[in-house]
Image (cartoon, rainbow, N blue to C red; front, side, top):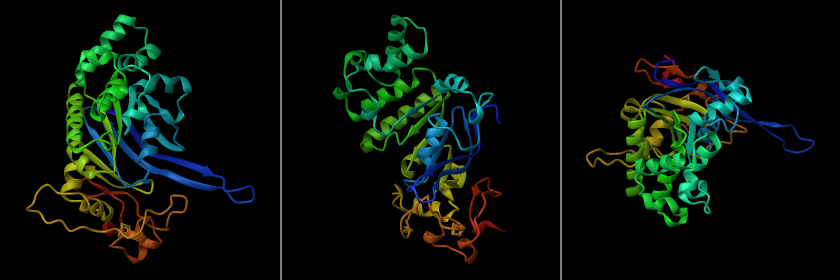
Length: 323
Ligand code: SF4
């Protein structure tokens, strides 16, 4: 674990048992199955993939909303997988989350000032005046004005509401911010402003970001490292520079080929994936991507590829790289 590391996850998995009826067998849904990664101060790990790939489950584990079925997740000196409820509640303020829909995550009947002060009221012994000072200072940090303190969420635009949600997530001075599709609900011009704000806050506060997104064009602007997920498993994991400039896994190539390119001199050849993402309750045998893969080999339908490190430093789960 490097000195800058604030979270170290190894083989993290989360399974759910599904009861299909009194006389039927129970099924196991492997929402997340073997994710290993580190979060570092001042760096952003982006987790990308289609809906159902396991990225939201990962967010719930990192924010300690749910416990892993197996694997370890170390924050500080503690493994969250085996930590007591008391340790988990002590560590919880270190990890905060910003959701996609800022309106849904704010109480419409609570003024902005009260919403920002609430985490301090619950978790600290600060006086009323101290809480107000901290809230005011955080509002300025995220580009809100002092007169916004007494306003309600419905009086703000979508971008301003997301600024409020970010400010609220930072009130307890966390080390890790989980950003779950934080700009997906915003207009393009507002997306850029919120991404710039997140970059500036990360540099100033030395925060570790786990950035969850289905949108590679957004991830390209903010990620230092990218982990591409398919059906609960990482399929490609490496530096953003390498994954974007030279994607190796057929699934990453297909996702990137569907992303708009700003450079008009580059010709994009789009790979259209066949079919839908299979059900995680009944994943295909072998490589789970094989029914949709344009490069499928004979063994792909029966042998599951393992994640292996290439000489480039990128980790890939694909039989094309077996030699
Ligand atoms: Fe495609 Fe086979 Fe690689 Fe899976 S293992 S991505 S099916 S080539």
